[in-house]
Length: 87
Image 1 (cartoon, one colour):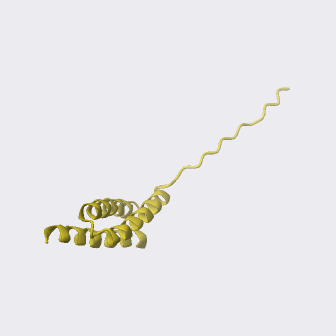
Image 2 (tube, one colour):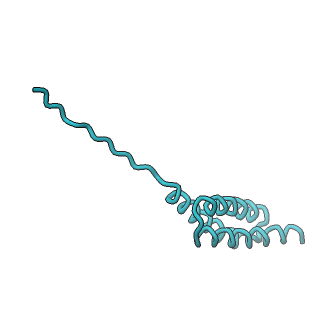
Image 3 (spheres, rainbow, N blue to C red):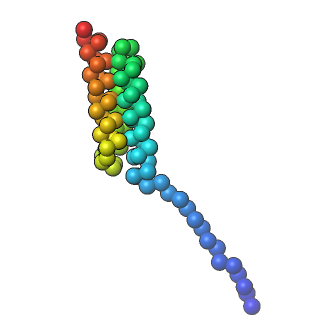
């Protein structure tokens, strides 16, 4: 008699909702940083611009309040940073 043991394999895969949630949180953090760094125009534009891109990406993957908040915060920071450069 051949008593072979069955083999089991488990794999955990991150869903797009999980990763977009993390991306949205990073975008909110960058949005808050952009609001504090708008007085340093080039740094503010960089941080707010990257946060805005991440927020838009997260919103496309999984719409939610966090990604919308990130987009609004980053847009305000970007507006302030660009405004200080133009003045």
